[in-house]
Amino acid sequence: MKQSHLFAPTLREAPSDAEAVSHQWMLRAGFIRQLASGIYSYLPLGWRVLRKVERIIREEMDRAGAQEMLMPALQPSELWKESGRYDAYGPELIRVNDRHAREFALGPTHEEVVTALIRDEIASYRKLPVTLYQIQTKFRDEKRPRYGLLRGREFLMKDAYSFDASREGLDASYWRMYEAYRRIFQRCGLNVRAVEADAGAIGGEGGTHEFMALAEFGEDTVVTCSRCDYSANLEKAEVRASGEPVVDTAETPAAYPAMEKIHTPGARTIEQLAEMLRIEPRDIIKTIVVSADGQPVAVLIRGDHEVNEIKVKQQLGAAQVEMADAETVVRATGTPIGFVGPVDMGIPLLIDQAVARMSSGIAGANETDFHFRNVRPGRDFPLQVAGDYRQAALHDPCPRCTEGTLQFHRGIEVGHVFKLGTKYSEKLGAVVQNASGQAEPVIMGCYGIGVSRILSAAAEQHHDENGLIWPMAIAPFQVHLIVVSVKDETQSEFANRLYRALADRGIEVLMDDREERPGVKFKDADLFGIPLRLVVGKHAGEGLVEFKERGREGKTVLTAEEAMDRIARFFLFSD
Image (cartoon, rainbow, N blue to C red; front, side, top):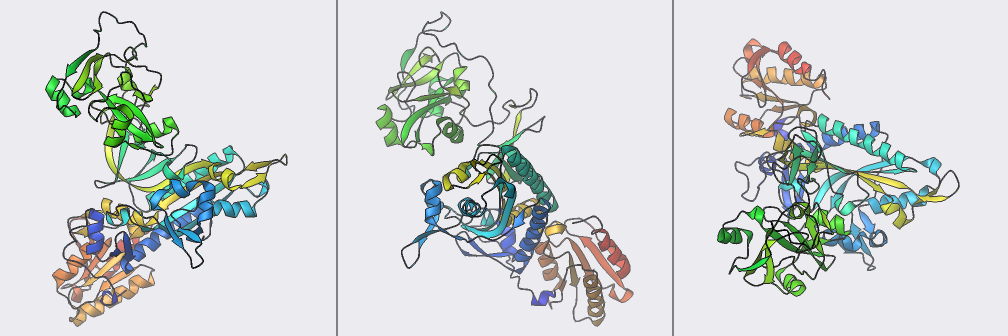
């Protein structure tokens, strides 16, 4: 490709609203352009990267026995109502009506469509297992699109679905996809960690992993152990209990004085209360009221901890859990936020295990400007529903080993694998006859990769202060051939010979043949981030060229033959 013909409009500065480093560099380098909030065009350089990512995905999915197909983006709303996700998915589901007033949804995912397909086409267990996949544009009406390709309303996704006749078959399909994902991300040059995760809106029966690309700028928090291989996202990270729970008894041991009410005017927050009483936040029993499917529930956690809404949701089996607003709290407890406590609480209680192990603490007195001192779990409020309801914290003990502590990292979700079980097949009637002739629902798994997100993840992990540094396997071109002065006949002829020789060997070359200043050419080359660079300049008359790897210091002057051999070495063991 001659750069004089390349459509790659570069920017001297990134737009002020581009927060993520990947977003900034891909805009500046001319890989993407925004059409509307959360909606992007992929320009030729960005599209070339996407196509290479797709090729790697296809190769590994085919290797794992999956079959590619393409399903409609426009889905009848009736399918979503049949699965029960029409309302549960919420406003992110983009709904449209045709001229006959029939409602459709623009597909954010395809569990319903593919399950209906299998329902109509497969009737016997003998036709299983089967795994189908597609690479397709998805649509989600994000409330706040941001970070460029990381959170958009239109994005490219690879979604796969496995169908088995047994749970042993599902396990085999799941781990086959898991290993395929590990190979895909490794081949794309990403540093990715597989972590235990929550199934979210997709649902299922556990056994779910997210693949997180570790990056300084990431939407998610990845929790790992300092000693063992435990890893999970923050929503899923377990907390190991320490110490013995307080015995549930109505008796008051002499060592634990009776509860007393104290005046705490204006102390609505943990910080205000701790400062007023000269205590640590860990000595406070914090009462958080949440709304679980519209019903109030109180969650007790230590003052230095935070509620994990996902864990609460799973404990209650609720479809939706959210923090209750001030009006709901008053209506449910008769007390304003800041003074609610567990004593004689009139709504259900969930007690975090750290609270259950407190000998006593400070808690709200269910009266404005008052708290209780010496509140003892099991004596002053019941402990029937005690468990892990808080978010893991930095340096918490590892839940899997006895020596490690939890560490936090930022990460970008680039893939997710789920064991769906019969969640969709039962609701949509996808059943097959088993070996005994009885009808049983097929057992499903689903497996997604954010194809366009991989661009952002790679850019976050591979850049410097001058621009992008693409891994060889997904770089838009493999070699950037720069002619310092195209008006110099010797340089132009030598560069063209190199260009043809590299192309004849199947190497993808971008030749900068523009009539621009050398500084402009080198600046654009740094922005583009093509892995290998050849510079034809003052040594052209001697048959010499400068060789440089993007992102590494130093350059080497080589003959054309030496340069060709050096480049060839990069592909001996590469993808």
